[in-house]
Image (cartoon, rainbow, N blue to C red; front, side, top):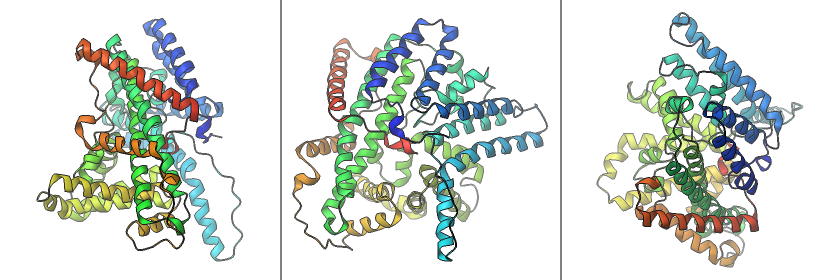
Length: 484
């Protein structure tokens, strides 16, 4: 059985990864002959994923082997187009069935048992299925390879080893970015490592760790305090503070992870595409989805929206395709109705953009567009953060003043956010909304002057020192997207 306990996983922001795993893999990799380096990376990637739960490895390796050998039948000319199509449907069905079972079986049985309860029928006996960490991400990696081989856009991987390395490479295995095989096909075969690229990676890794430990975790403390309040104590200002803190938490947590994943790729000569581009500076929801979790948006567009017909059909078909994509995107994030509602929520505002809002917003000041978009996104995050749909709707009602607290509302400010939290909140807002303070993209050190290189070295030392002090005092918390 797969293991779903994220606390048993090795994470980038843990002492064991920073001081044991990463030095070992770097030393082994660079001391090994070039021909053995893919094997070294594969071995360490499997160790990384199996850490604390080695039973996850066999199902993952078997499914990769099945993918690889079936993919040989997908190559144009390997068999008739009809049989190639049937083969593609079968292998995609196999992978999606695994994802569906491990991720959605519990929800399915829960809903059946709830329906049976209405008729006073004995519920089904069921042992909870444990969710494999990262299954949503590596399933999408597999799909890009299989579909692109079928389309003739990529060559077959040279070996099962190379295909497995693409799927399980530790830097992006757990929470992305979602890497298309076409983007790393050449680098799996042959890549160039350099000292400049390595130190650029070290700098970006440090920045990503600082985002996670110094900003995201601090904002998470505030959000957790607010969302844990009894509803009779929660007033509108505190509700807005809670979701503002969570908005910063999820952004700095996930973009910090992406920074660290991209940085680790650089250290080993891989170039992964950017996953974020100042999303909270977006002027509408369409723009937001060009900037937020870019690899997921690209995947959904290339492998779902366009095959459904994209925007080439009638207006109704275009809106239908948008809703299908975002309902499935919500369901991909989590097996709960609040995630489905989150997908429908964003699908609605994307449809509204196409219908009229993009033209209306052109007449509004840019700052107002950014503010309105951020408010919409925050309401969406309520659906994401709440335990269930009922809590989310109640929380939103408090935010807009439809529900007022019934208990005492004079909670001391320090109960929810201390002075450090206020400083971090202001720093997060500064970094998020003012371009001069954006932490991405980060140019390679080789294009910088000596003085700026020295400055960046000082930044690495400072951020690492602060992050490690925080890690030593509070311990690590899993990245939010590990549960997806």
